[in-house]
Image (cartoon, rainbow, N blue to C red):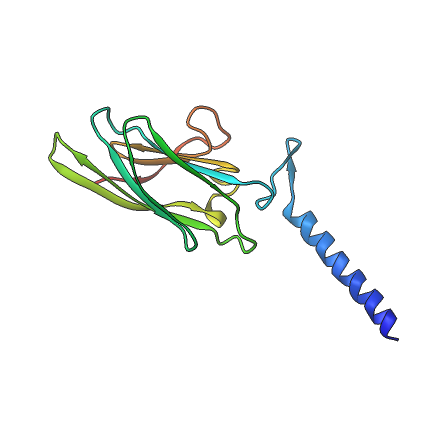
Length: 155
């Protein structure tokens, strides 16, 4: 009797895992777009102005990526895997000083949120272009499936 329960239990677990993996993995254009399969890369680029440095500090609930100063056309990037619960989230503080208007511009933004971004803003490469008027987000600054979209404004 105990062997039949073991066989039935193993079959049920195998079936559940098979169905789960089929639901998670999707083949689009012949590529695997499983949210957990590949590492994601987030990059923040400074496209504000040649004379303006951008300071960013990014973190998640598990990692503090530190503070970084980006000069014009520089970027800061990091790689990670989305957790099993798809609750992976990175937040950044951004700050830059405008010498022409003599004012600071500060915005806190969510740089990556698995449920918001995956297959809506980016798949594996998620790019932020920080510009004079705000932050633009998509999967490629030059060529991408999701064009850059304005996500926030600076005051």
